[in-house]
Image (cartoon, rainbow, N blue to C red; front, side, top):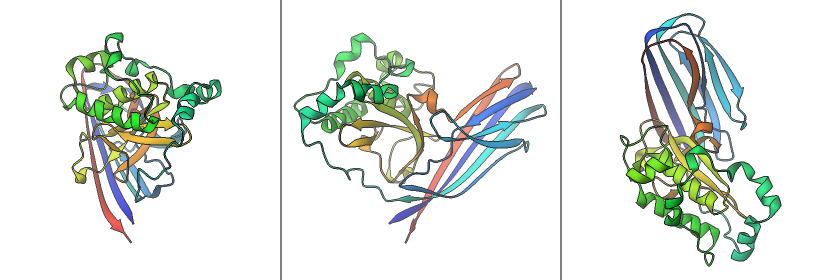
Amino acid sequence: MSLEYSITYKTENTYEESVREAYWQFLIIPEENDSQQFISIDFNNSLNAKTEFSINGYGFKTIRVHPTRAFKQISFEANFKLIKKEVNPFDFDLEKDISKSFQKLQELGFKVDHDTYLKTTDYTRIPKEYRHLFSFNSTKSIFENLQSLNSFVHRYIKFNTEATDVYTKLNELLNIRQGVCQDFTHLFCAFARLNSIPTRYVSGYLHQDNGYFGDAQMHAWAEAYVPFVGWIGFDVTNDILAGTSHIKIAHGKDYNDCSPLKGVVYSTGNNETVHSVVVSSQSQQ
C-alpha cells in the first residue's frame, strides 16, 4: 500500500526597515527516491518575485528567490503532493560477521569513501568530558550498537521546543539536556562518528498522526552507514527507525548543510520570521 502526502510549507518574514535587496534559497522540496514519487509542486511568494529552481552541492533541489523592489514584508507558500510507498525500515539483512564489519570501518579505502560523513563539525563536536557517556560494544553488531545509541540519546535528552535554537552546539545541549530533533540528531551523529560510523544529518517532514514527536516546522533524523548493509535511518527524537512517516528532503554533515532557508538581506533594524508546516495523507490503492 502507498500513501499520498500533501505538504504545505509557509513562512512569513517581517522587517522593521525596508529591505533594499534580498536573496533566498529554500531547501524544502522532498527528494525523489525509491520510496518517494512526485505528483506536483507549487511555490509562490507575496511579491510575485522571480523564482528559480537549482541543485545544491549535495545534489538536492533548491528554490531561489530574488525580489527586485523594496519591501517590509514577504510571505512564501509551497505545496507539495507525492506518493510514498510503504517502507519496512527493517527490510535488510543483518551483518553476518561482526568482526569483519568493525574491520571494514578501519580500512583506508572505506575512510576515504566516507570522509565527508566521518568529519567532526561545529555542530557535532563532543566536549572531552562527555565522550565517556556512550561507547560501542564490539561483541554486538554495528546495527545493534546504533540501536542502543538511538535509545540512549532519546532517553538522555528531553524534548523541549523552547530550550534551544538553530545555533545550539553540543556543549550547551549536554549541559541542559533539553532540545528538539535537530539537537537529538547532532548528538547521535557525533557519537556515531566518534565510533568511526559515517553518519548523515537528514532534514525532512514527519507525519505526526502516529503520535511521533516533532516541532511545527521541519523534522530531522540521522542516516548511519553500516558496512555490508548500507544507509539506515534513525529517528532519534522518537527512538525508531525512519519509515513511511518520514519524508526526506536532503542530507548533509549537519544542520548547516540542510537549513530550509538561507539568504542575504540588505536592511537595518529588527526582523521576524514565522514558519509552519502541515503534513496530511490518504491511502492509495
